[in-house]
Structures are given as C-alpha cells and as structure tokens.
Amino acid sequence: MKKLSWLILVVVAAVPCALYAQTEPTPSSSDLALPAMPHPITPVPEIGRIWAPSPPPQAEGFGLGAPITEKGLEVPSPTPQVEVPVLSTTSPSTVSSAPDVSPTVAPTFAGVVLAMGKTTPRPKVELDTTLGGLEGFNGEKGLGWGGSIACYDPVSPDLGLGGSLGFYVMNSQVVSDNTYTTVPPSAPSTSPGQEVLAQTNTRFQILGSAKVTMSGSNLRPYLLAGLGVAFISDTGNVSEIVSGNTVAYHTLADNTQTCAVGEAGVGLKIPLVQALDLALEGKVDLLYDPKGGTTTTYLPFQAGLDFGL
Image (cartoon, rainbow, N blue to C red; front, side, top):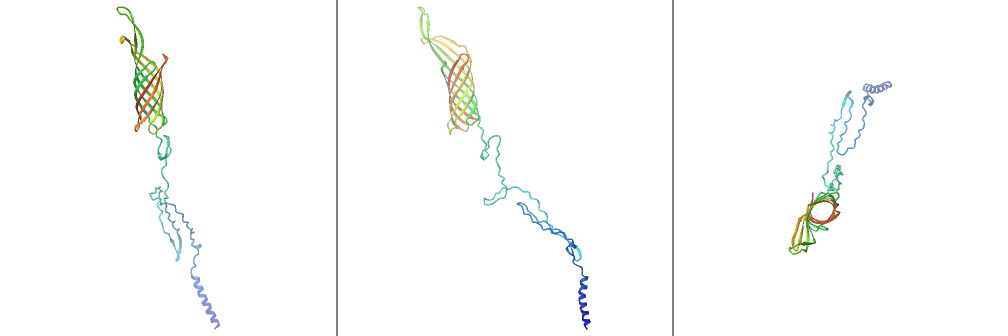
C-alpha cells in the first residue's frame, strides 16, 4: 500500500510536466524583431498653419503562429497655405495679428517731403504789365505816357529774378528868352521875343531786374531794381515868337542815342482773385548819355496787373 501511494503521486506530478513540454513557447520581443517605437514629439503650431500628427510606424507581429502586418491610420498631408498679410477691419477692441503694412512716405528729389505726403510747391513765374504817366526833369521837362512788361522767375518765396521791357513817349517844351531885330520900312528896331523848343522823346529800354516782395496778409509791398540800356529817338522843332507872333519856324534833325539806364522803385500789390494782383508802383529812371556826358531823370508812375503763371 505504501508503494502504491508513491506511484500515484509520481503519475499526478508527471502529467502536467508532459503537457507543459508540448506547448510552444511564447516568443520574446527579441524574437519578434519589432522596430523601435519612437515617442512622437508634437510640434508647437505656428500662427496661420495647421499641423497634422505623423502617421504611426508600421509594426509586424505574430498572431496564432502566422505573421500579420498592422498599419496605422493614414492621414493626408495638409495643403500648404500661402500667408497673405490682411489688414484688420475689426473694432478697436479686437486684437489683430496681421502685420502692419501701412504705407510710408519716402523723400523725393523734386522737393522736400512734408507731413501728409505733400511737397513744397514751386513758386510760379510772375508776369507784370503796367501803364501810366511819365514826368521828366533836367533838360527835358514835360509829361508823357508809357508802360512796361516784366517777367520774374522766383528763386525764393520773396525774391524774383528776371527782366523787363519798357516803352515811354514824352513831350517836352523848353522856352528861352531872346531879342530879335526887325527892319521896318522907316527904321530898324529891336523887340524882345522867345525861342520855343518842342521835342518828342521816344524811349525803348531793356533791363535785367530783381523784385523783392514783402510777405503780408493782404497788401504786399515790393521793391524793384534794374540795370540795362535805353535807345532814344528825339524829334522836334524850334519856333521864334515876337510879340505873340511866330516870326521863324524850322524842324530839327532827328537824333538817336544810346544811354545806360539805372532803375529803382517801390510798389504795392493788392490781391484781386487767385493768381491775379493789382500793382501800383513808382520808379526813378536815370539815363546817362556817354557821348554828351549828361544825365536825365524820369519818374514813371504806373498801375497794372500781376499774373501768376
């Protein structure tokens, strides 16, 4: 009985060991040769772009003794987005991430760029036309008429450089006392008389001029100065008058001469409409005759219009 009990115990212990020996061993991770599974790092998304997770790696395994392939979920790559700066039209309380693309004003060679994109305007050319009276002194006393036209190119807001053309006609008369001898039928006699010299002086002059205008609200005074040359033509006649009667008369030969001219004057501008002013001016003209060595003075008083071209 004792031997039979030990035999039963040996059989009971041997059966599980035999069953365990017939079972296939479970393969280890090294036998499966599975690839390493790196841990994906999720990138930080950028503004304006969409990021999709990378597809999981493929792994091959064994199931029920046969190799199988496991595939991860395929996610299509996102379409590249073109970043276009957009100006925000939201309310002031909304924060916009769009870049500042406001236009900037760059300096130009034509002029100095001011605020608001404006440039300093260039002054316009000025055209002056005047007409008035003329008074002569020295050897030619009388009254006349004339005028001038001038053009100035402003080199600064107050200073203009240019030239002027003038045309003047003056009638003068010079009376001198004289004694005339008459021979009546009875006896010779002397009588007091006068010699009258009447002349017409025509003058055309060309000057280089400068004009300085004082800035003001409405009335703008200005100064004139110029140097140039004048071409003068004289015509006239001489009459001898005795006791109110003309006893002799003869015509003078035409005389032409060239004189140097210096001019200075003052004026006043009165605005009328845009780019149009009324000008009142008075000048002094000094004419020097190099042949005769004489200087004649004239005073033109003129009024006219000034145009901004």
